[in-house]
Length: 205
Image 1 (cartoon, one colour):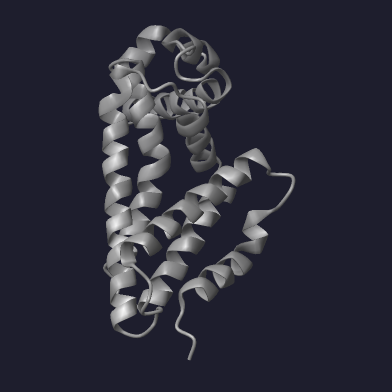
Image 2 (spheres, rainbow, N blue to C red):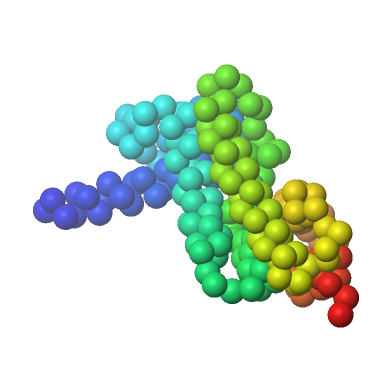
């Protein structure tokens, strides 16, 4: 009986997250209420508070649900013994695949960048994600530095500049896929984007 109750509670939690994706992406953070999410998922407002402390907590759990699995995969690649070139190519493939094909990731990305007004109550959350992005940038910078030292990347590259360019390219393509989805299927053109990136930084032997 306890197992069934636990499974039912998790089922309700997942339903609330699904409704939160839907309502936040439609109305934005500021205009969404917990009552909106409760009604969309067919539960009481009390059920929402059983799983989440408040709207901010639900918002954070929602985006963690979408981003953390991808973040875990990406950061694990920095520990691999692959070449700098292989690591950066792999990261680009992972990011663009999720940014163009992962429904929850795409919706969360749109919510956080296009549907959210960053009020004081959300600042701790924003700073947390900013810190994670900065860690990614610095890890990529180290990969470029290693690649330059190993003769993989051009000697005239500055690791910090190359990392900023790489990071901006990934986020820019994700944003493009949301704004201009019908203009270009980025997922089908990943190899071309990778080749353009490599052409800009590889040593010309």
